[in-house]
Image 1 (cartoon, rainbow, N blue to C red):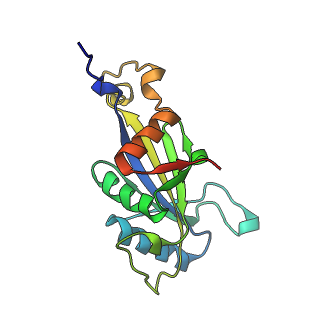
Image 2: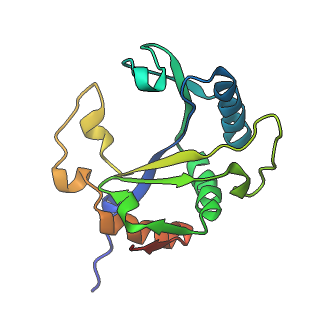
Length: 174
């Protein structure tokens, strides 16, 4: 008799974050927010500097980028488009425990997004966070319970298997 695989060990995408750094340029900030809204259909949030950096002419509290966080079913559809923009190939070093990060050089590489002369050419960072079912038990406010580390942490190998199966992405070592 074969034992069924434990459904609580399944890996899933927790959230997807798209980030565009703009520095201290206000026009570029507006363009980045417009681009993120064009790609995701969601209203982006301003990234605020936490400390000053005179070399980059950044003061504390200044807008230095834009980002949006997606959760739920929207993440899978958008992740497929974003993986396609990088040729369905991810560097092995881009994968960590519980996460995956990669960059897109030009937004016109994303399928379904056309060049907008008002925006210009911008690149972006894409971060995916992974988790298992049941992790919320340790994170919730009421009646939180202990979740062992082996259940909280999604290893690099599990993420590689998941993105190969779910998104048809190959992992390349360089």
